[in-house]
Amino acid sequence: MMYQEIEQAERDLLHTYNRFPVVFDHGEGVHLYDTEGKEYLDFCAGIAVFALGYGVKEYNDALKDQVDKLIHTSNYFYNEPAIRAAALVKKYTGMDRVFFTNSGGESVEGAIKAARKYAYTRDGHTDHEIIAMEHSFHGRTMGALSVTGNVHYREPFEPLIGNIKFAEYNDLDSVKAQVTEKTCAIIMETVQGEGGIFPAAPEFIQGLRKLCDEKDILLILDEIQCGMGRTGTMYAYEQYGIKPDILATAKALGCGVPVGAFAMTERVAEKSLTAGDHGSTYGGNPLACRAVCSVFELMEQKQVLENVNRVGSYLEQKLSELVKEYAFVSGQRGLGLMRGLVFECPVSGILQKTLQKGLVLINAGTNVLRFVPPLVISEKDVDDMMVILRSALDEWSGEQG
Image (cartoon, rainbow, N blue to C red):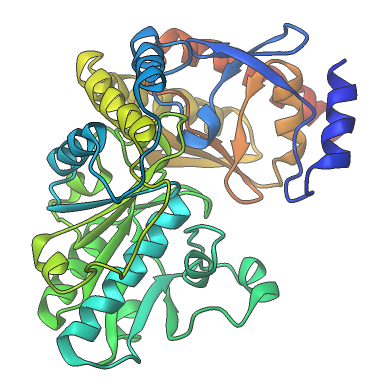
């Protein structure tokens, strides 16, 4: 039956994904189950989305209650969940103004528009430049794609939005070399995700903050994947003692309900987007914002950050063992429960093995296994994952001769 469904999907869906041959049916805790009842240990969490795990009663009940009350009204009117959600985003980000979107890509789009409007308000020019990072990933929409540092992704869709320059991540001199009097913003992921799980070096991100302050350049941090507790603080930039001017967030913000946001300081808000400059039909609807409220509340109640720091250290230790055990595993890096295991070879074949053995992982680039599990995993879940992963590595390496 499952393969009939896959064949149907391949006939009907636009082929923009090379999907694994599994149809998931339901989840419970940190496990997923396919339509044939097979159990999988989930160390992907829907690409760092399902932070609280599956089947969380309090979360599900909150959404069911909101469905029975009100799902949508439009932004011509206020709604109570959006008001509460905005206050919570402000509390946990340290920002002053919030705009709710439907996705991470839309959050980046809004951040770019806000930065350009800020610069336009300041000097009346329309030729401002934005500096982005090589090997970055910010989304597939035209604006987000324009600041994504991968030529392969951008090239088929050019011309994209103009006046974008690229610098080397964690190389402050590379950024400084791109700065001109036209530079209005610098955008970066606090931890590069798709590019291979690279955390920002403290001297780099702190140097960028200083540079931006000196030249009235806006620092945009994309924490769509690395935010919402993933690295051990609610947002990764907290660990560096700095604060962005604009923040993009999504993924675990709604734990499965499509919702994102971009937030900014009051200084930026006063000179950027005003009535008519930006909008979204679905952005900030009651259902999505009820999810946001529930996620923040449950993260506090379940002491998620404490768990991330404890289990994240344990995961780091266990992945380090693999670096010592296998000659083709060259390193591991990351923060909290956002980890990358680096290989001397492509990992596509290894991913097939882990999935067959009941472990869901994804890659970050061609040679990195990405570990972004639900933030509620335990040390035992890490141990179970290691048993499966070692079995997959042994089998795969044996087949390589």
